[in-house]
Length: 273
Image (cartoon, rainbow, N blue to C red; front, side, top):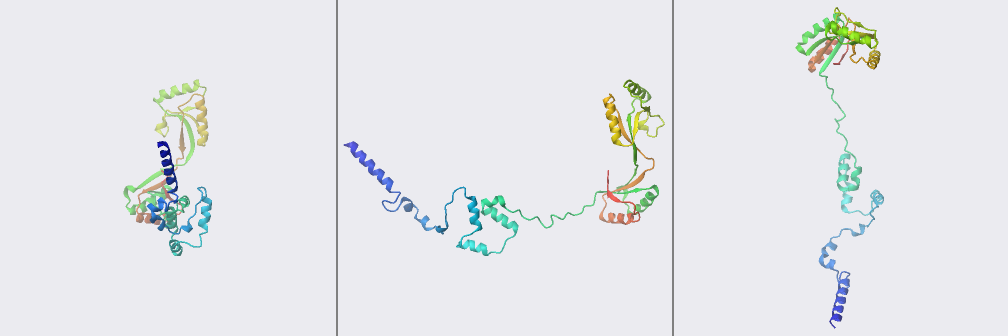
């Protein structure tokens, strides 16, 4: 008897629980708890349910807006066009899908205009000795002091492959003996009367017109066991003179241009070294 009563009670309870949310016994539970949500709906006829993978369809809907739009959309359509940078920002903030296609803001008007910068070191020349004296005399009127440096430049005429001196004449004799042992006989010891004292008692192994030819011969010497050979550029005796001027003010640069106009064969350039 008790089991039958329990069975009927459970059956009645299940029926009540099944029908109550579905409105079989009056208003649904959702309507009874939150009736204000139904009253607050705005334009429910414009809502539509799309599948999760309908991005293409969404883009088509954006391109073809519906005939009836909310008042806010009509206000936006009537508003004047915003700048390109502002449109890109709005699209990114309001439409996550358009964030990846946002148009970058246009660069500032002055971004493409780079102001000319006067180099910190200006070089003038190549002057002959006579023209260098004339140019130097005119520069003196600018009172540039230690901002002016005068240098002598010489053209490279050839390249010498040599072994640097070490231990004077005795060191040179040891090196020549080693060269003979390696089968190298084309060399000579640089004498004490050589103009460049840093090369005296060194061993010259050859003179070459180009640096590439000198490097190729050094490679041959290395393959035969000579690893101390070096290359030095030989320059002409008659050189040219250049003037280097550092940290010129705009006024001094203008005065320099005026002085240089009397030397049309010379050029003004940034310092090479």
